[in-house]
Length: 99
Length: 477
Image (cartoon, rainbow over all chains, first blue to last red; front, side, top):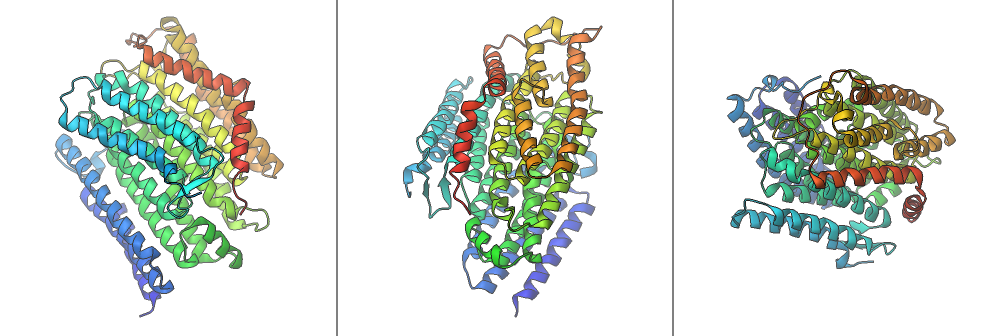
C-alpha cells in the first residue's frame, strides 16, 4: 500500500478528533478527542517513516506515546478535582472566569 | 565540543527537584525552608554552571543539545525568573494553602523544560522540552485545590494546551515527510531546493499554531486571561515570563533559515504580519475594558507578544532578547505588587482595590507606577528601550505599516496602564483592604525588579553588548 493512503487516513482521524473536541461537552470525551488527534499524528509519523525508510520518526512515535501518557495522568487528576468540586464534568459549567 | 559537563545545568535542576520530592515523601516537615533553600541553590547553580560554558559552544547527544551563547543567556534568564518566583511565593504559598514541597519540584521541572526547549536545534527535543514544561504547568495552575477558579484555570490550560501540542505533533509529521529530518539545520538545507512546497507550509503553520499557543498570539490566546486570573499569582508571574521567552526563542531559531531576504518567503511573512497585527490590536483593545488587574495584565502580555512577533519577523535577535529581559523585570515586579495585595488567602485584584494605595502604601504604589510606565513604554524605563530597538529595526527593514499599528496600539495601552495609576493616586475614596507590605523578601524582590527596570532603561550598554555577542556567535545558515 502506498503511504498516501495512510496520510489521508491520519488527516481524517485528526479532523474527526478536532470536531469531537469542538462539539462534545464532556471533559472526558474532549480529552479522548485530543488523544485521537495525537494518535492521528502518530500515524502520519509512521507513514513518514515508511516513505523515507527511516527510523527517526518511528522513534518519535514512542516519545509522543510517553508524553500522551504523562498528559493523561495529569489531565485525569485535574478532571477528578473538577468532579469533586462541581459533582459533574460538563465543560459548559466551568464558567467562573470570563470577560 | 562534545562535553558531558555541558549537561550540568539541567542535571542540577532535575536532581534538585527529585531530592525535594524525596524529602517531601519521607520527611516530616511543617516548614519548608530546606525545600526552598535547595530549589534556590539549584537555580543559582544552574545559572553559574551554564555561564562557565560561555563562548565554548559545548554540546552533547550528537548536537541535539547545544549550549550556545544564546542558550546560556536564556538559561540564566529562566533561572533568574524561577529564583524570583520562588522568593515571592514563600509567604504566599503558606497563606493560600498550597504549602507543599511538590510546588518547588514542579517549578524546577518547568524551568528545566524551558532550558531544554532553548538549548536544542532538534524539533523532537524541542517538543519534549515543551511537554516537560506543559505537564508541570498544568499542575502548577491548579495548585490551590480548594479554589474552584484555580481548578478551572488548570482544566482550561490542560485541554487547550494538549490540543495545541497535538497540532504541533502533526506539524512535525508533515515537516518530516517533506524534509526527511527533524534537525533544523538539515531542514534548512532541504528547503533551498524546493521553494514553497505546500506540504512544508502546512507543516510549518501547524508548528506555528503549537508555539503560538504557548506565547499567546491572537487566534490562539483564548486560554491566557482565564489561566492567568485563576492560577496562583506567583505562578501567573512565571507563566507570563518563562514560557513566553522560551516560545519566542524557539520560534526565532525555527524561523531563522526561512526569513533570509534572499528567499523572500512571501507566504510566511504574510502569516507573521497578520498574527502580529491581530495580536497587538486585540490584546490592547480588550485590555481596555478589564476591571480585574490580574486579567488586565494577561491581556497586556498578549499585546506584548504582538510586539515581540515584530522582532521575530525582522530576525532581530538582539532586540528580542533585550525585550524578553526587560519584560521579565517589569512583569515579575508588577505581579509582586499583586502578591502584596493578596493577604491571608484572599486576593484583592479589582481596579477599585487600588483606590488610594498611594496614601496607604506609598512605596508599593510608586514601584507599581514604575512597572506600569515601563510596560506602557515610557522613557527612561526598560520598556521604552525594548520597544524602541524592536520598532527601529522594523522600520529599517521596511515594515513601516506594522510599526505604525504597533505605535498606535501602544498609545491605546497607555490609557489602561495609566488608569491603574490614577486609581492609586487620585481616587477620592480609599479602599479598606488589608495590605501585606511587611514581608521583607517580597520587598527585596520588588526593589530588585525596580533596579532591573531602571538599570536596563538608563544604562543598557553592558547587557546589550553581551546579547549582541551571543547573537553574533550564532553560526550562519
